[in-house]
Length: 170
Ligand SMILES: [Zn+2]
Ligand SMILES: [Zn+2]
Image (tube, rainbow, N blue to C red; front, side):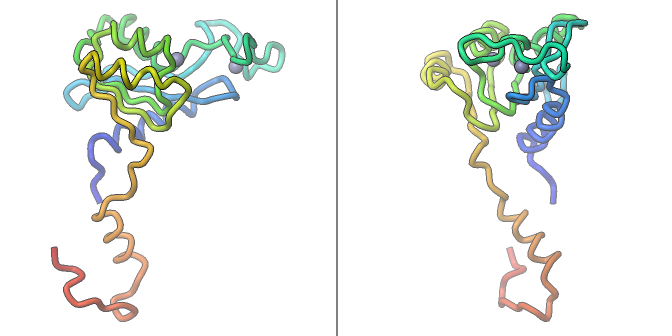
């Protein structure tokens, strides 16, 4: 089985999220241009500052939200800026849909396509993306493709157990 590009990059964003430092929500994001990753980011504290996961400080709560971290989407853009890489026309893969603040920054960074894993918080992004001509892709319902299902059946079931005429024909 060979993953399509979107699933491949979302899988990498999910791995990036494992580095996040706020236990309330772990988000990973990557920026991609011409099938190459130009930046990665996860939600975490300002550089060299204590993390939510540090026992001494914990989360910094404000209106029922933790405000200690820089969100993953913004951190990818910061990462690109630090390295002098243009974000114009890039695709953002993020494991959670951007919050309102991140969305606005993503738009102004010239990112033209956003793929997200699960919906988070702000419905306004759908209408705004449409108005801006930004391709906003909800990957939450992305299920296994037909070819994935075929290969799992072929792997788990012996030929003698199941024979459906024409099954293996495309
Ligand atoms: Zn936190
Ligand atoms: Zn955000």
